[in-house]
Every structure is written in C-alpha cells, then in structure tokens.
Image 1 (cartoon, rainbow, N blue to C red):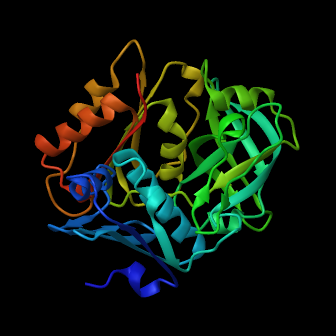
Image 2: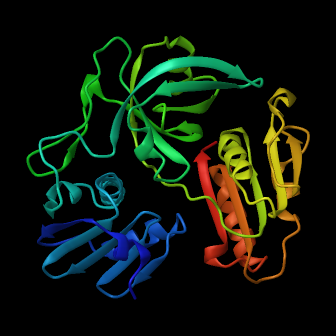
Length: 349
C-alpha cells in the first residue's frame, strides 16, 4: 500500500547501524510510537510508522538496523529523523550515534527544521498565562506542520550556541554550560506573511520557561524547531478534555474546528480567571471544572460518547497519570478504537 506521504515525498534518507542490537529493540520501537497513537505496522523483523508528515521504515535483522525516512520537504524529514533518534536514544543508548545516514542529508549546516526567532512582546492573558509574540522568518514553514513547535532557550547570561549538522549529517546539540532548554508549545496564531507567531506560557513556580518569559525583553533571541506535529483531531463528534497545560491546544482545536462539529469540552483550572471565552462550534458544549472542588476525571469518565462508528474522537491531555487512566478507560470500557483517540501526558505529578 502506498501512503499519501510516499506519493508526495520529495526528500528521503536512509540510516544504517551495523552489528548487534539490544534484544527486543524492534517491538520496543513499535510500542514507543504506538504510545503516541501513530499507525504502526509491525512484523518479525520490520515495522512501518506513518507519521502525520513523514513515513518511517525500520528493519532489524542479524546484520543490524536499517531505517528509511520519507517526507514532503527537508524540514519534515529532519523532524521525523529527530523523532527516530530520540526514540533510539531512550530505548538503546548509543545506537542512534552509530547511525550512518545517506540520501537527502544536509551536512555541516543548520538543521532544516531549526529557526531563529526574536521576542517582540509579552503580555498577560487571563490569570495564569503570558502570551509571547515573536518574529520568526521561518513562520511559513512552521505552518506546514501541526499545532506544536519546539522552543529552545539558551542559558541565561551566555551567548547562544545553536544545533548544527556534522559531517555525517547528524544533529549536534550544545552540551554542558551551553545546553539548551527544550520544551514543546502550541501555536496560538501564525502570520506567515509578517513572519510572526505567538504562543502562551502557563505561569507556575519553578518552570524554566516561566522564569525566562518573566525576565525576557524585546529583542531577546530564541530557537524554534518545527513543524512539530500534533495533528488536529478528526471526527464529527469530539470529546476533548485537559487542564491548564492543555488549554492552549484545546483553544486552538476548538477555534479551527468545522462549524458543524458537535461534542463536549471539559477544562480544569485552579483559577476562574483563566476561564476566558472560547471560540467553538455551536454544537460543542464547554464545561469548566475547578481543581480542588471537583475532579476532572469524575466529569470525564462518564462523559457522553456516541456508540462505536465513524466520526467520533476522544482527545485528552494534561497530567500523565490522568492521560494514561483515560486511555485505558475509553479503550477497555468505552470500546474506543486505536484510531479514535489521542491521550498525552503533558506533565507528571
């Protein structure tokens, strides 16, 4: 079967790791990508992962590991490769460093999915959020992905050192005192013509990004990686829920939903001042839960859901334990199919 990505792919690369591999690596890779609800086709020695913007093919046999990546452009290719490298680093440390890449691999250059940005403005939004607006010449390319991007903050008081591709085409991230703080955020608004976008930072004690944005000044430089994925959920009927950390994503999903979409949004906040009006289809009910007075889970577990069939989708993000509990509940007790839900742990208690 030929996927849409394969038909449209204009950028491809291959990576090889010769020699022995940790036992059970291939099933572990399949499980890692399936955890994010990416479609995975898994055999005894090979697997295929269909990402939103790319396709991964991985073969593990007695000769080692072979990986093929296909995407529609260089930035999406780089993002998919970074996802594979991240997964290998977590499951089999040292394996990704042994990958030797060939094909459409830029070398001795800046990664194609990396962009510079300059801070324009920071302003409060609601009781607990700060809206950050930046100038970014790569905004048009960021529009080609999903909802999210990667924020890269240099250490305070040091000149930034940004990632580069080495002579083998591998991304080299700064280390030691130059290590970048990296975090995923959701776009609020993108203006490709002006080369500008905005995002919201949730204010909470001890957060590295919170500390940065509280002290930031117009003109400060930061790094951005993307497009970063995070597909908009499909379905005519949507059940969507989350806490403050998921509120920017939920706001964007509802604002860009088809006017005919129906369903329920359940949002948990500690401060009623964060309950700003949401742009949503007329058929989407919005309910707010106050943390400490009522549990988000209690409202979510019994939320109405259409019977099994096309057109329904469940989207839940927030604290990791809640996301895992919701995933098990809806799949084991509400007959939700693998392609009918997205469950993401944005933070851990």
